[in-house]
Image (cartoon, rainbow, N blue to C red; front, side):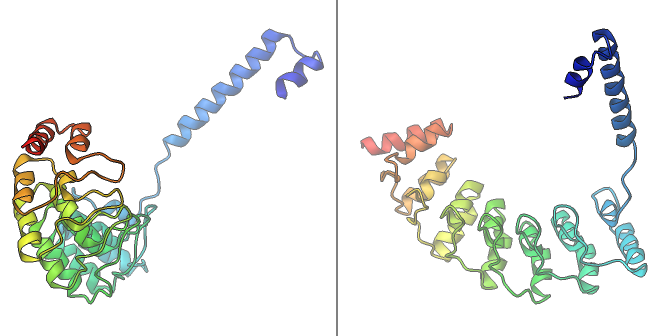
Length: 265
């Protein structure tokens, strides 16, 4: 529109017009550079990181609270101070924040609460549980509870604590996947054995695609164990693909070949 106006009124020659446009663009670039050099206002979340000592982080939060700060303040991703501390695995920091009445039921933009974010730290899970969390089975936006995340991490100790505390072993995520499927993906054989032999989860449960845990195996030794425990490795999924075909597609060629040979016996 600006270009048409100039030309239609014959106020400028084309060279003059180009010079004006170049000047405008140069000024815009300068403004963008100047704005990019303006530092963001520091906030309390800048003090919670893996470069600071826990002692300094506690002192910073203490000063923040003394000046009227909100213990449940959240960053742009919805993470509170408690969430940041448990995600980093800082027990003493999380304990201090909880002592200052942090709300453990809050969730971030991904639907994750403090318990979910502590899934790889059994000692912090115990801390959260000792602070009377209301719902062990609160799920994130993908339908995964803390137990799912612990299985995904392959953290046997976390899984044991959560199950003994009453976490639902029969829940599924939004894709219909089970905790066993996540454990199989983690490649932790001891965790898989615990779920099958001690907890007695159903080894042949299927997800929404009609796939049982063998479809999620990545190692031959894990597939061998699942087969030893009578998993069905030959039944196709809901679109007619067998486990060895899906595994081959996903790049697990050795495991795919192993399962294919078993079918020919």
